[in-house]
Each structure stands twice: as C-alpha cells, then as structure tokens.
Length: 156
Image 1 (cartoon, rainbow, N blue to C red):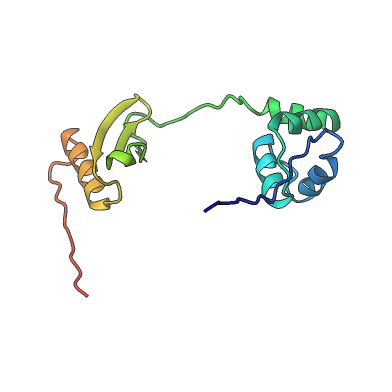
Image 2: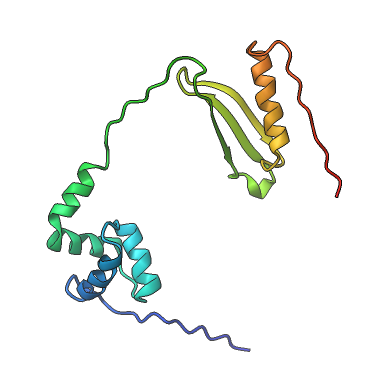
C-alpha cells in the first residue's frame, strides 16, 4: 500500500518582486503585521510559502519608514509603579510539564519580587485549590486574623 500526499503548495523560488502583489493584498487588511504574522497569513490565505527573511527584504525595500518605526517601538522603556508592598499580587500558571501530568502555579509580589507561592500540582484548573493557596499566603503573612473559606456545593 502506497500513501501519496498531495500538497496545495507549489515549490517556487520567490523574489522580492514576485511576493509584492501578495503582500500588498495582505497589507490592505493587516497594515501593521510583522514578518512572522505576515508569513503565516501568506501561507494560509495566499497559499505561498515565503521565508521571513524575504518578507523583511521586501519591507525594507518598499516600506523602510514603517520598518524603522516598528523597530523603534520594539524596546520601549516603561516605568512600573505600585503604591507599595502588597499593593498588587500577580498570579501565573504554566502547563509546560503537561506530558508528565504536572502543572505549575505561582503567586508573586512584584514590588519586592517575593515569590508568595510556587506549587506544582496535577491540575491548575481548580479555582478552589488556587483560592486555598491564596488564603494560606494571606494567613501566613498575617493579613487576616480570622479567615475562613466556605465551600458551597450545589446539587442539580
């Protein structure tokens, strides 16, 4: 049994001039696209496979001012402001260890950079568990003298 895979893409050696009409069509709808997104849109909508380097060459030749504007906003300095310690807490979760069925959840106080908790658990889709970690941290830091967590069970 022989398996034949047909592709909708043709192998073509594109040049800056050959991709021009396709990029112009895409830019009418998405005028601020970067090279990575432009490559994806050209692949999905125009059915042409083009390298990012070729797209960048086209943009540098035909739209140099826009390339410079985009580059100048790339590393923009911004100031982080917080009223003080424990004004804001930031939470994040990762599923990078999904293949091991482990999930990471972290709580950080960004003003001091203190890690409030860093937990690895078999799920990160349990809001009650995350709330319990939050409440434990509040209690550990002395933020609440009496803190109780009520769980409501609804039976349908």
